[in-house]
Image (cartoon, rainbow, N blue to C red; front, side, top):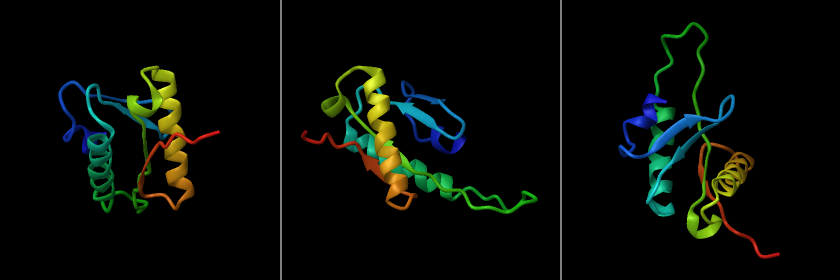
Length: 105
């Protein structure tokens, strides 16, 4: 959590929404800048040194992003679309950031 908070703006909101799932709400921030922050956070998480822990492991992170331009202003829809994008990132091999893309039906 601290690895990401150091890169956030003062009005951004960071919180846990599930076991290993976190959300960053970034009011007034475009998707391009939010994606850049997600890449910075992903790199910071990967760089965390876990060597002092008894059971050695490597951290990784997958991010999904969505913005009001493609999801509107309904928080539930924004979160659902970001969650879908995160699962796309995991399906594509993890360790990446995927922006939600609205598909035509």
